[in-house]
Image 1 (tube, protein in one colour):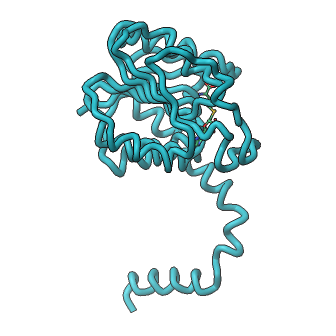
Image 2: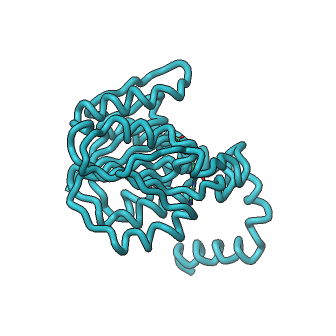
Image 3: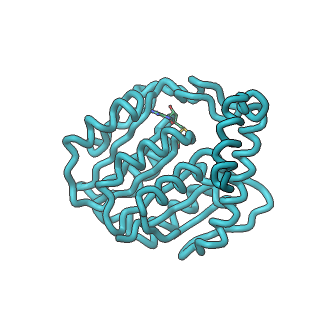
Length: 241
Ligand SMILES: C[S@@+](CC[C@H](N)C(=O)[O-])C[C@H]1O[C@@H](n2cnc3c(N)ncnc32)[C@H](O)[C@@H]1O
């Protein structure tokens, strides 16, 4: 028997013996540790070509607005016409920030959310948490439109009719691995050189980071990191084509 045969046989035996019964209780912790290590390596391999507040001894969620300001300044996002996509609108705090910041009449702002909360649990947040009714946002800017429902249901029909030459600013703030990977995969064919991706929970190893890593490695996406805040929790990358 060759070495390869032995490896194959051992793998089959592990499956035959239902390895998952022993391994599954530890798989989350192991996956987290593995991806935390990958995040640490990724950080070393990807210098930030712009604003970066690393290292902070405490976390402050409001630092994301400092990142937005810096990105906006560096990329002239207050004046250029953009297509702003937000995946995960919830109470609309980031959505409203960008809407108020960019005054170009030709800009369009697209918000996607169930508005009925998370479709899966996320850490200590249970499925259904973060539910904010769309009507409570009170956004009357005619440049903005909202797509209620799962991204998995609303995004493909939206993209079937989407055509635009404007610069894209894509804000991934859905927290979840599945939601982030789905959105990125669907938007892939529309991404152009210079488009910007913003992440809101990038430093969560098993979710936005893992989705971004799998996406960029599977679709061979080139990019540069143009900003980071709050120990990489908030991240901005620019697509390079
Ligand atoms: C962290 S909140 C967004 C916060 C918001 N950007 C802000 O600044 O206040 C995450 C949102 O993502 C939404 N979400 C996550 N996965 C989704 C999916 N697959 N489809 C639709 N909405 C989703 C949840 O409903 C939730 O409202």
